Amino acid sequence: MDVAHQRGGREDLSVMTAMWGIQVALCTFSMLSLSSGGDVKPRSCGEVRQAYHALEYSIADVPHQEISADPLRICAPQGTTCCTAEMEDKLGLLSRHTFEDLMESSSHNMRTSFFSKHRKFDEFFLELLNNTERSFSTMFQRTYGLFYRKNSEVFQELFRELKRYYTGGNVNMDEMFNDFWARLLERMFQMLHSQYRFSEDYLECLNKYSEQLRPFGDTPMKLKPRVTKALIAARTFVQGLMVGREVASRVTKVNLPPACSRALTKMLFCPYCSGLPGLRPCNNYCLNVMRGCLANQADLDTEWNLFLDAMLLVADRLVGPENIQQILQPIDIKISDAIMNMQEKNFELRNKVFQLCGQPNLAAGRVRSSRSVFDSNPRYRPAASRARPTSAAGTSLEHLRIVWRNMQHSIKNIKKKLSESKRFWSKLPDEICSGGNRTEPDEEGCWNSHARGRYFPEVVREGLTNQLHNPEVELDITRPNSFIRQQIMALRVMTNKLKSAYNGNDIYFQDSNTTTYPYTATVSPTEALHQLTKDSSVTRAAAPAVVTAVRQMAASRPPRRPSPRRALRRRSSGPTAATSGQRRRRGALRHTAPPPSCCSSPPDSPSSSHARPLSHGRYGDSTSGLPATAARPTCVYS
Image 1 (cartoon, rainbow, N blue to C red):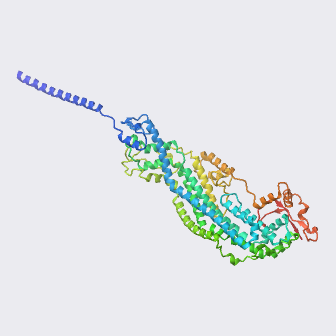
Image 2: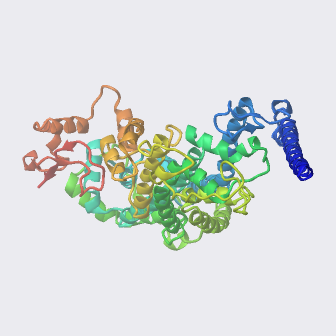
Image 3: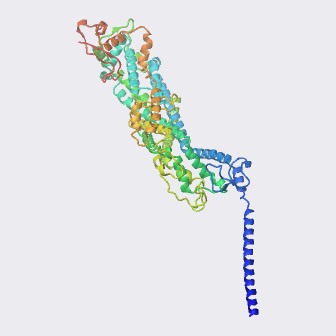
């Protein structure tokens, strides 16, 4: 019994000893584990240091090992990081510069096309005008001799005004052409009838009935609209190229909002702070960031596309049958035909003028025939007019034809470029994210804004209003960028000009070197704002900037330039002297009776009692073809 009891005691002691040994072993293992865990060192930042140095920053800015991420404001991974607050600031600035470079490179081809084509077309159209003037002078000098030499300023003024109109001057083409034909009629009539002395009042009477008399046939009526439409198309197209270039350049340099800067830094350089400097962003993540940053630019797209459509319409006009080269090249023939028509109708014209305006006084000692006007060529031969000059002028015209053929090829090329530029601003985020290996094609191995892995949020659409639910860029959709809205307004104004040019209608252009933009609003600021606010994208917040821009453009419009004929008449009359015609116009403006000289008896008239004043009309009304000026009375003799 005692022996059995002793054996049982020894077995219990063995079990207890074994259990105690297991506990000691477990405790020892736990202590070792804790000891080994406390000896783990932070991860090295060696890879980040090399990548940071490759960005041309000092490697001394990067810690050797991960540090606490608490000081960071944008790139703050959980726990530790390889970035300091100073590094984060530098990387934030670099992200802005990177974005600006992306915008610059993405729009470079489009802006270059606008710039090069603008310069090329502008040079050609100016060369065309200069060559046309040289050819005109050569042909008229050879054909009309003394008459042209004595009256060359009339034709030179015509080409000066044409060139000033093309370059953006405030030239009324109707008024300019009417003045040209009026001055030419006066010179021609006086030289064909140099035995008479014609007063200024008599010449005014002559021009008063010019449309009824039609001394130049139908040439003035046909030439004016054709030249005007051709110049409108050429000038507006060149100005449109400039506007497209300027708008594109300005839009690509719009300042980034703070939310966009933070999103760019997080996408491009926060992988550095997480120890993953070579990791590229997910494609959908990039799209959300870029569509947020370019939300205002995307709103430009609608007006941009309408602008390009209008440019394509005018480009078609430039290569059509009524293009500027086909219209200007034979202008010397057209004007010469008009002169010839007047010469052929000389005696009939004289009789009608004498009936309408009275018999003029004879000039003392001057009895010359009309044949002395044209030197050795008293009659212009229409058949010979069709032979183009073979002198240097002819060579330049042949060169111009070659240049024009090249220009037609350039027009086809620019039409292709314009078509490719449609939807440029709305497609820009996709172009940036898909180009240059900027995103990681592996959806599981890309940077998703906080780690390596798939990007789950949905991609938002383009435009400011669609950024309300953008998870990456927080924007106030009620506050659109005012500068972008100004560009939308500029495109809208230019589009209206282009559409009018395609239809052959003229719209005023501001000189390109006097304002920010080479065009001026033709409506009041209130009307312009009303037109702009029809677009739902123009919100109340952008209205002040729009009004300011329109008012600045409207205020910069220069005063109308007086016509050459009226300016010449003012210069010749002196500062104080007034001609009878001026006194008569003043009397008409005051609605008083005309002075007695108005209806004085013409020479060779039986009696002044037959003269009777007509009702007050407008000099240059629809029957005269001349620009309307002050009202004046008209006298007829029965």
